[in-house]
Image (cartoon, rainbow, N blue to C red):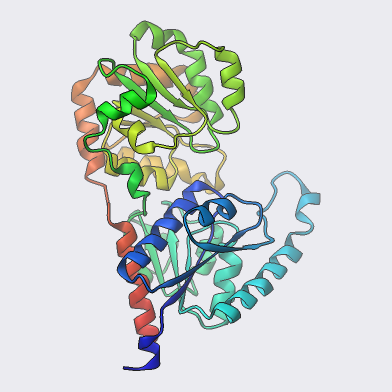
Length: 374
């Protein structure tokens, strides 16, 4: 047996910025450790971003790069970007020289670009995990140097060399989609009635203004229909929503800043209203509940709309554009609650798209890449 075979595998995972990047990254790390507990993993993120807290909380070490994205509408704020980018590449090269990784994995986000570029310069094989149905500029460029590109949607040869593409699906937080047998506990957790139809409204950890305003505007319809709402407002909007609803909101409403038990929220829901981030869609496919997607219009390349349309083409979700949501969203959700046939149809079709073992599939590809390079 050679020294290379004896030594522990060392893998860098880079990216972050939002939960949509961080949670899949942690899922991949967990899968790598599950397959080979001796694997050493180091995360590289962006200073000041969510990953600098979430990754250590998951039990992994992380180093931050001083890197930010392009600030739209502000030339002055972008003047330092080339210097930050150069500094981040140099710092990434230093990290690679010290950690000596066998492979680098990029999940998207500010830090992913400098790290994978530096990895390529150092001859470290890399794998990209592209979550969306429309690849971003950074990943398209990095794809030329990567050994493998793991994707979740068909048609990705429009952005990457076909020979490098592997359809694995997107990794999910396993505990979030483990909903079997939890319905009773869910209603107890949210202090709602198991006898009433329930809508889950979730705009992600930071929140979604349109979803929140849609609930507020159509509150009378919710009350008249006597349906319940588990309402995750998000960090940015929670205080305003609570102030508007008062100290004693309607008993059919459960208003939360953040859902710590996503599994229970999914378990309680009859219909789910959500943005269309790739990670969220991956979870929704596994959960298999009827879904109404309202893509955020404020994302690069409008990729959430493209993600949603992929499901709509399969008759696996309903779609409402952000600009129509204030008037149409809650009426559509209430109507769906009353249409058992449509609910069943949507549930069956979205379940067909589920890839519950995406994290393990990606981890296996990483190890195969390392074995090949050795």
